[in-house]
Amino acid sequence: MDAIFIPQLTKAPERTEEIQVKEFLPGLETLTQVRGRVRVQHHGNYLEVSGQAETIITCTCNRCLQQYNQRLAVNTKEIIWLDEDANQAQDLPLEREVAMEDLLETISSNGYFYPSEWLYEQMCLEMPQRQLCDFNCPGILSSDDQSPEKPVDNRWAGLEALKKQLPG
Ligand SMILES: [Zn+2]
Image 1 (cartoon, rainbow, N blue to C red):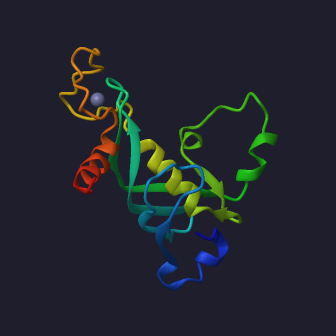
Image 2 (spheres, rainbow, N blue to C red):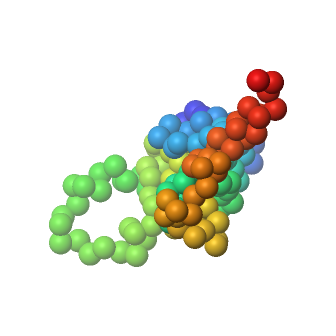
């Protein structure tokens, strides 16, 4: 995903750019490519960014520690304020009061918007804090409970089944 040069966006049709996403995001460990779209619209003093995307992630169950795969999806919209002085913020006097709008996301109106980083952040926010392979996961079974036939890792179950179909 290419960065969007914000002043350029004002010349785009409807001041909008829509990016089709079908790739792995840097820093985000996913089993499949992230698929979806990010739409960025310029509204003068702010950007309206919306995104719908989904992927599959591998989680580790908090109870039984087995790995399982889970769909991760985002469908979100965010307002990002544009500020001509956003890059000089650190030069302001320390005693300056923090206004409410400073707590919202602000980027320079002459800078770039990075759809890849934005989508990465949105996906991270959607990551399940509590990961359970199953709502009724019993947790780690003691060795007495585990039959020797039962594979430890669910991912190998399919492989074991295939092996049994092979001759010899
Ligand atoms: Zn579990």
